[in-house]
Length: 314
Image (cartoon, rainbow, N blue to C red):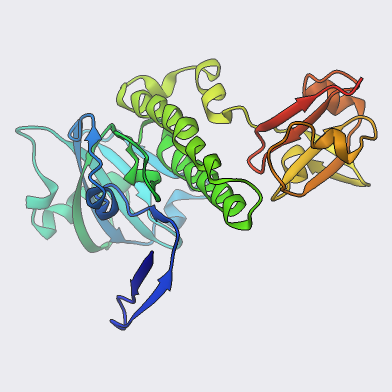
């Protein structure tokens, strides 16, 4: 397969050989349309409008610079959102039938709303633009078509409730990245790629449904944590080789073997269908107990911290 890459800035093109294509091109993915994959679920759960502007609000906000600021003023209810570094902001609110639309307001009216919402009477905001976006809770009917894979919003659309959209997308990208790397390096056969959809789509389906539920973000940790961790090595601080590190710092690009005792290379490769290099860590009894392992048990982990195999050489 040959891919043609175009530089939107210069207009120049170049061709590169490619074995796989990853569609990470957002909610309106052209890759998804090209491979004929449909989205399932509602795409108009709510409509929000946002005014993006620049204004010196850092001093007014003080030392607590929150990502979301809920505005409860009756004349300008909504959300004030930091839009990056500096003093770039967005004032957003849900639109419902019969209400005033921000995209139909005059500039003077927008300035009045922003001033009221911020509570800074002498504020002089500079308005950049007004945009409209809709809440969607959709899932692609499949995440793969041959050598094409969908990740992020191209594979699933979530409402902002619970903030799971970006986390799910990042995990998608990491999952397909290490699996493709193993296949392209010759560490594993291409059947490993079949696990991308079987492992990632159920998580996305759960998070899409959770975001669709107006109360989904209020679910307790018992419901959310298992899906968020998805079988990954749990976070734990430990003393290792004279340093204080996280369990996640132990992971390598290949396999990572955790054991409380010395093990042989043959043990670490027992019934493992890969030639990926293995990094071995002899860990203390505290971590062994934290992971729920038996004293003589070994744990072989993938790059994403999930278990590749568990063996007990005793």
